[in-house]
Length: 158
Length: 158
Image (cartoon, rainbow over all chains, first blue to last red; front, side, top):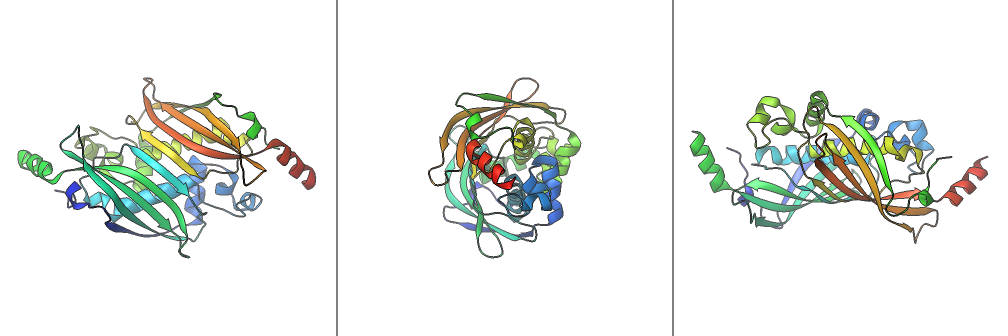
C-alpha cells in the first residue's frame, strides 16, 4: 500500500524534491527529439541567439521537474494522475552544469465531489538554480486516492 | 531571414501541425528518464493501474506537441521564446500506436508594450488521436520578432 494518500497533504506543507545536475548532453538530446530550436540544440548556433549560449527547452525543464516530483514523493503516493497544468512560468534560462533544486508547496486540498475515492491537491512547484535564482514556477492540481478507500480496496484484493 | 514574423499571425488563423506516430519504445524511454510512474513505464504494471495499459506521460505528450509546433511553423518563424504556458488539459490517454495530429489557432495578438521589437501571440493548440478524440489542449503566449525590426537588424548585419 502506498505510503502517502490525499489525507497526508495539508495547505502550507512544503516538500523538498531534491536536486539534479543538468548536462549539456541531455539538453541537446531532449532538443533533438522534441524542441530542435537553435538555442536548445547547438552551442555555436545558440551563441548567435538572444540566449547567448545553449539553454534547455522549457519543456525539458518541466520534464526534469516531473522527475524530481516523482522521486521526491509521487512514487510513494497513491497518485491517480492529474487533469493538466494550471500555469508554467519559465523565469530564467537553464544552462549546462546548472544544479537545480525544487520544492512543492500545497496551496489547497479538497475532496472530489464526483468521485468519493479521490481527493485533489493544488500544488505550487518552484525550481531554483545553484545561484538561488527561481528558474521555473508551476501550478497544477493532482489527484490522490483517499486512505480509507485505498485500505478497503487493499483488503478486497487480499 | 525567417519566413514568419509577428505580423503574419492574425486572430482566428489555424495552422496544421502535421501528424506523428507514438511508439511504445518512445513512451517507455521518456518515462524512464522523466516520469517513471507504472502506467508510463511498464506494460504489465500499467495493466494493474486505472489506465488499464501503457499510456504516455502527459509531459511526453506536451513534448511531442512542441516538436509538432516546431516542425509545423516555429522553426520558420522569428521566435523569441515564450514566457511559459497558460494552461494544459490532458483530456484522454495517449497509447502506443496512436497517430496524433495537432493544430494551432491564434486567439489574439498584441504588440509588446515594453519591447517594441516584439509582438505576442496567444495560441490554443489542440491534439487529436486517430479516432478524432481530443487528447490535449494547451494555451500559451509566444513572442515573435516584428518584421520591420527584423529587416533593420538583417540590414545592419549585412
